Length: 302
Ligand code: NAP
Image (cartoon, rainbow, N blue to C red; front, top):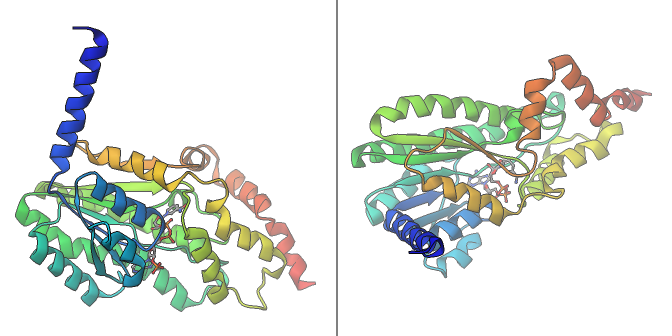
């Protein structure tokens, strides 16, 4: 038997066993109206999962329904909505093998001027939303003997930058929760993987820019830096990693028996953590201050 033949057969067997392993596995994904969540729903479905894709606005899911994907309305900030969705999936499929907490957005703007209601909204979505879903799904996973929870964090949670403080804080909080959930849920066969994307192509920049309209006051202390603030809101969409590439890499991890605790994927996923690790705080903050033009902020007063 030649090497080529051996390799071909091994690959075919691998593909076969991966497809077998996924067949019938039930996945629940949040935030599927666009970007990463939508691509995940499509690709998991193509890969053999029974997918339940969710979004706040059901009309955004019509394209997925047409492909045979289960779709449900879900606002992660609404506990009743979370409970109803988990009950619906349980009634329809009897189990949830994979929960992907993807829904989220970036509240951008200087921390000192961020309306408290927006800070609360940011944490309600990016942090408490995840807690709601985990609390609703974990008992079901425990009863079925295990499951996988994937929480979409961010490299921004590792390297906080000016004008994105509340978003970065929400993702840092999520990363801390991931660590504890991993330890607390391991005895029940539930694995928790923290996915920390770099810059990925999606509607994130548009939504982040829209958040500025709610948060940045016309008389901002940082009026001189409006351009930099806007640039930070849109930063992830400047030459990002494609959604397809990101999702391909993520899904490959899901086929492993034992998931890695933390996975970083996409543009900047090495550089941002390295800057955090290697540069002393003073140097890092001086550098970021220069990049974001903070010395010019005082110019707005004169
Ligand atoms: P996106 O295209 O804007 O998608 C975000 C999704 O979250 C949308 O479906 C949005 O729904 C949904 N969402 C927001 N608030 C929600 C709520 N209260 N309830 C339910 N769904 C809600 O951006 P994305 O890049 O794919 O974002 C997905 C995740 O990746 C987020 O957690 C984000 O923080 C993270 N991330 C993204 C990047 C990046 O560069 N793109 C980098 C790091 C981390 P609506 O359409 O209703 O708003």
